[in-house]
Length: 236
Image 1 (cartoon, rainbow, N blue to C red):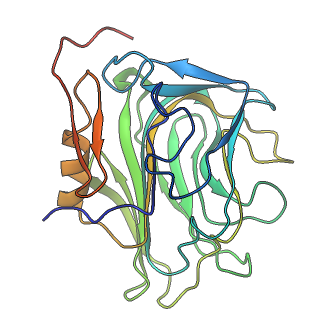
Image 2: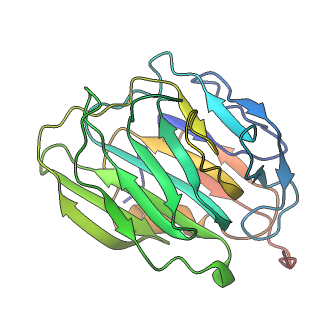
């Protein structure tokens, strides 16, 4: 089954910079980040974060990134051993919904409630730096209460955190740094995607498979078909 269209897709490549692919929401505002090879070595296929307090992208949220019910977040990530946010609602202060790298190479998510009160977090312990790029994600199903962490389309952690939660997704988003927190992500991020529904593992795997080859990525906004012109991947 084809995945639904995201509410926002940031390729984070040379063609789009920090813009959303169809300008449905405002572009991210970059600070001390730069273009780098993408998931399979495609030139300018990602943004690299330096692991410093001023290296981040801030995404304004005028409501277009607000997904208070069910949601899925997905991105390609190449961690380099420094903790920090991949996608963190609320740029500073109280915590909104946040997907992070913690303890150097662990994937972490907390689906915070609308009033910024905490739910139980999910943590995955097996991201291995020597394996390079990973297609990671997290989802929350408001109807069932199930929260999940996924790596390369495979569910690696699940937990029922309670049904009918309204999520804290009303604020601007930071990638790389949360204001007031001394943990600064170092590594690369590409193809950040946000959905207002829960995707299945099969749908996520299909998205991964359509974006893992090196080449020039083209994006069809109507069916979210991402394809490439195959070439030999370069070593990164």
